[in-house]
Length: 104
Image 1 (cartoon, rainbow, N blue to C red):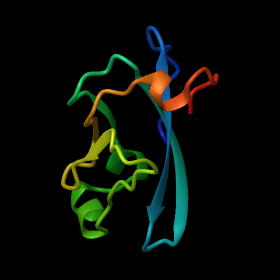
Image 2: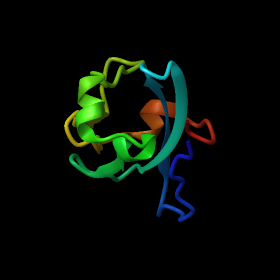
Image 3: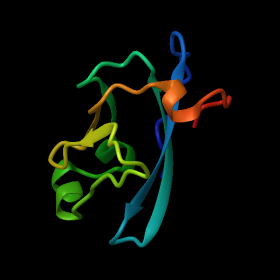
């Protein structure tokens, strides 16, 4: 399975997100890297995880896909029915990573 990768550079600073995508029925794990501009507003589209995994929205929903944040804040939101991943809360690069480069 090949995941979509963007070759275009994002304007300004960006926060790179690494998502571990689990496919329960196939018992395999996929890792996807998505970049989100720091200025991305609430509701901004990030990716369609169902499409990246080669699944339909119904299959993603049936597998009860969800996001599990490592921190208290959940910056992204997953629509289980469509597979769309969107910004739930605007990200502050300095708050997330400090002066660390790159910010992952």
